[in-house]
Image (cartoon, rainbow, N blue to C red):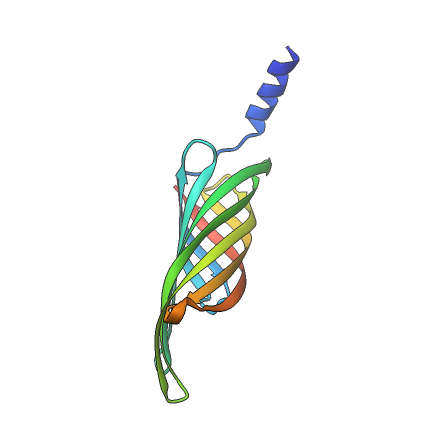
Length: 158
């Protein structure tokens, strides 16, 4: 009987994540500012994929994009609060004119992710996360930089 009561309590405290969420991830540590963000639930254990696209365009000097893909594990804290960790990476391109020198580079990067989110009763999900990234530039696969990024996410769930 005690095991049944504990199982029922855990089942009522568990919260499933939304099948889909679309919105913005607003940060600034990596220079892309707001990124379009999409999350898709996978499996039955509160896991999901997250895809983020950041575009930066300075008409005179700089064009760049970055596509990030992460696999995330999500755990319920209490009520609408969840915390999550993730791992993944991405690809991007930089096209810039820096001090009269033209730069056209493709890069790849590895990324981690840890954050907390609140799932409202309305279809709104708000999150705060930390995403460290290690980038590799195409020429000789050299490690170019470490980029920590803190961002606020606002997503519509459906």
